[in-house]
Structures are given as structure tokens and as C-alpha cells.
Length: 227
Image (spheres, rainbow, N blue to C red):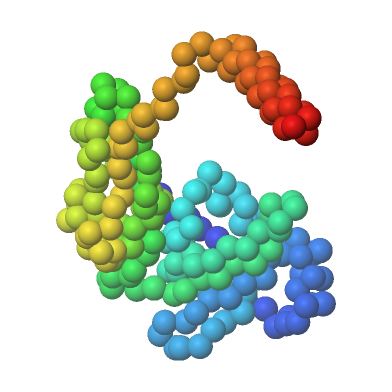
């Protein structure tokens, strides 16, 4: 994975009004959880530089190098908040990491291939699990795992224990969780003979029969009264 470099600097501004001024000035407020010293350091990043560095990135947890005025800090992007309407970043949180120590991250699962049960059996592929938790070294973090489901037959399920992610990754998510399943197509209920036209034709007959029964009942009542 190519290196992501982000310019950042310490900030003293705090509070709602202060961070709004920062954003108007073209800066993104954020923070870095310090691994070595402990605590959290408040930072700010130039919005344009940040968006250029993150362009085309789809992962939510990425390894980055923070350029803190010439000092480089390896950090993991933990949370990115975007403006609901504009979609632009308004806050970012990092956590400092050691490149020699494993971290736990959540990685999206991307299903690839057309299952045999879909192609030959007319089944429907359903993705049950969309992310998986793994432990790995920071340099081995990927934005997604491509999962080949081409071998899945009708009514077959792929579980977390079936994932082939490589020796670099230790899967933390429980192995019995289902990742994807190919479901058999539901049997559609048989339509009545003649369809809607037959039903429509039958309706007047029912009404007519009902009127005949009503008339017969009325005649019987009149005869009874004459007696």
C-alpha cells in the first residue's frame, strides 16, 4: 500500500466557535491519541491537502504519516466526520501506532465472482457480513478484502472460517458467522386458471346467484304471510 502523507500541526483552539473559525479558514480540526506519551494532542490539517491525500481512498481505517512540522508520526485514521450536506471533512481523529506492533482494524469485505448457484441454479446471492475484524501490522492494513464466491452452490453458505486472507492477518471475528449465502429462488404461487379475466367473469355469476337466492327467500316469506 502506498504511503499517505498528511500535513498537520498542533492547535490551541477549542470550543464550537473556535473550530468553526478554523473551518472557515480552510483547516480541519482533529486529534491524535498519543501511544508513547499518553493523552491526546489536538491538531489541525489544511483541508485542501487533506482531501488531496485522501482522494480515491475507500477504507475507514488507514495508516498515514502525519507531517507535524518536519516530525513524522505514524498514525491510524480512526474516525472521519463529514458535513452531511456538502460531504466535506469537518473533523478527523488519529491514533499513534508503532510499525512493529500489531493493531486491530475493521476491513470491508468485497464479494467477487458469480456463484455457481446463481449462474446455473437461478439462486440469489446475499451478503450477510460486510466487514471483518483482523489483527495485523500497520504496514499490512488494506482498504478491503476481495472474497471470491464463485464456487458457492445453491443453498451453500460461506463462513468467516472459510476466508483466505493470508498469513499476515489474524481473524478476530468469530468463525461461525456467515459471510455470504446463495439462496434458492422462492416458488411463486400458481396463478388461478384464466387469471384476472376468469376472476372478473366469475364475479357477475356470484352476484347473480346471490340475487336469485334473495328473490327465492322473498317469495317464500310472502307465501308464509298469506297462510
